[in-house]
Image (cartoon, rainbow, N blue to C red; front, side):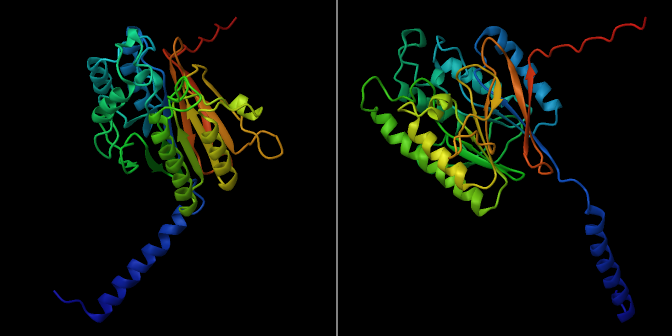
Length: 326
């Protein structure tokens, strides 16, 4: 059926009117927010293994977009057997929320210990790669698309959520697999340049896209307190120098998330050139054994801080009942 010239004119006028009305309705409305759950150093015990699925379900009920596990999926004295890895993979794949996993020292560098099974650490890392980072998607029942670093270090990934870039790096605790001599191990010499390249490349991406924030996710506590005193640990010094330089060049907020030392906290331990705390840099450390819990990160573009953080111990602490009226 053909339309008359008058009908065409009326239809175009209606479409233009709708287009003009849409921005007016959106004007003044706050930008959306995004919630992310940060966990690490879990499960360390059979009790934590039983509780973790319950905690992941509670996280999902909090309208969380993604869970990020910053490493150590077992106790430091526990076995590094394939069966343990397979159990943790099944646990993470059952998460109702997309889950991104960063490897920790308990998961590969410490596997040489007799209590761990006397494995070769590099072989255990390769097994983790075969299991946990097989494609460009997260773990979990729902999948999140990821970009992975080209080459062998597929554990290095990134994704954008709202105005924020999230970057994962294989930087394990202990000594970052440096080794016991003054000369770093061959594995460190091969991996660490890839770590620094992925870090600097990611900040460059964030600047090109004019993003408001960057979140860097590692397992190791890299010694920020000592670094601020000019006493950086040799196995983390170059990483921290690079991170400090990128933070100074980036105009937005920067968050470093790590586990390792089992002290849930949020602070500003990086110093700016004037030796004052760099307020655009926030360190978040996950809960760790014997404490269990998750840290909720909320991305809110309506605030100058961009991020807010809430600690959630697990099991939840019951809210006290009000006292009866006297």
